[in-house]
Amino acid sequence: MAIRTVRPDELTALQDIERAAGRCFRDIGMPEIADDEPLTIGELARYRQARLAWVAVDGADAPVAYLIANRVDGNLHVEQVSVHPDHARRGVGRSLLEHLAALAVREGVPALTLTTFTEVPWNAPYYARCGFRLLDDAGLTPGLREIRAHEAAHGLNRWPRACMRQDL
Image 1 (cartoon, rainbow, N blue to C red):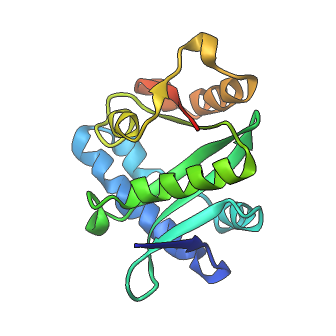
Image 2: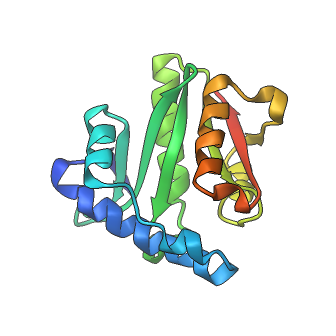
């Protein structure tokens, strides 16, 4: 599966992928997450303009998954990685993470970070299989603490969450 940067006309496709991927949360008793709206077109455009947004595309060059990232405390922070359920369990998400890791290595960035639900099978357990490790409070940087506070303010602490890091 090819990975490339997001094009301006694909931002609504990213929203569609996010909505479809989010439906899986309903099946595990997290309907609030399933019903959460994706980022706005403007927010997604900012990631694209910062060159921190990528898509995995099918043979017809149509996006089937995406990853957006930010720079946080000298690392690349995975803000969102979503795979359309029709393309799940095929290594697409892992390929996007590996693409970001390769970029980070080229730029001399020491690590990837992310925040995630700890008890959702396709979240923390998946990221652990991809080489991320859980961070305890002592391992949190100021930027990660700020992200966690923002998540808590939006009610995400209703379910167990954690920060994870992959050293490169």
